[in-house]
Figure 1 (tube, rainbow, N blue to C red):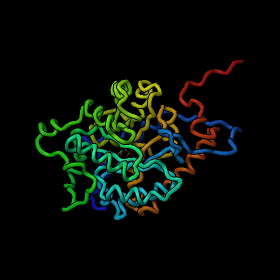
Figure 2: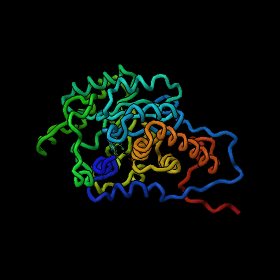
Figure 3: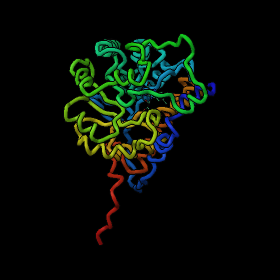
Figure 4: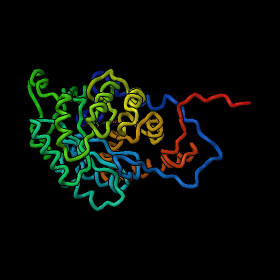
Length: 340
Ligand code: FNR
């Protein structure tokens, strides 16, 4: 991978404070193991939107994967499906959404297949794209709401990153907004746009990029989504916002079980997934670790990574004395003194 593409994939906004904090925040609380309580069987599955998923994770939507490997989104989607992981295809994918859906169809044990929507153009453009995704076999629309004003990560800007000419982006609803800040602001999404799409969208609607509990409360109170994703976009949009491990308990308290919660940003080990679960998430999205795998060895390396994660999650649950993620004891309550 050339240096500018590397800076684009792995960089963050500003001075990268949030990017750095994301990873550390997952290991602030210790996991208390239990001994002599090893379950006979471990189940790594979870239920999401009424569907059994073999693993609690999905590949996060990431743009321009062809820069990392020629197999691009097809390689990542297929390897994820084969290993029981979910996959979210970015609006900025370099492969047509129909081809990704067709490649995953024959995998019987696959996780969820979702399409991430950036609302470029007019409302009707978003709806047409959501309908196209539904026809192809996608199971939900992930509407990203945290990047109305998009910036290139600092490192990428400094490295002079630009997309190659005639770059394929076959799923854009309309050309991405360009121009002055005023023009970008005029095209930003608002709550009434979400309500409009929610009423018409043929698939469940998931909001990605919630950090503030008041936004979570509003989305639930007005029934604007079927699930939400606590995310700071992997530290790429606004530097200085809290890591998601910090935001998650506050969002979970605001949601009060009304919709399932997913989380991403900085999860690097299956133990982080257990921490996320203990803080209120039902499932997680994984970003850059998959980029490393895809860039280094294509679909085969992605499949290996997911396989290792599943084995390590099962081992983690065994050491905590839990047969499944639903069976986890509360991990972050203060240990009470035992009665005499
Ligand atoms: C992203 N992310 C992202 N999100 C989204 O909704 N649409 C997109 O097109 C992209 N594109 C994108 C490109 C690259 C290179 C990265 C690294 C990330 C954000 C992504 O879905 C997810 O929120 C974060 O990547 C999760 O953080 P980690 O696991 O990378 O730390």
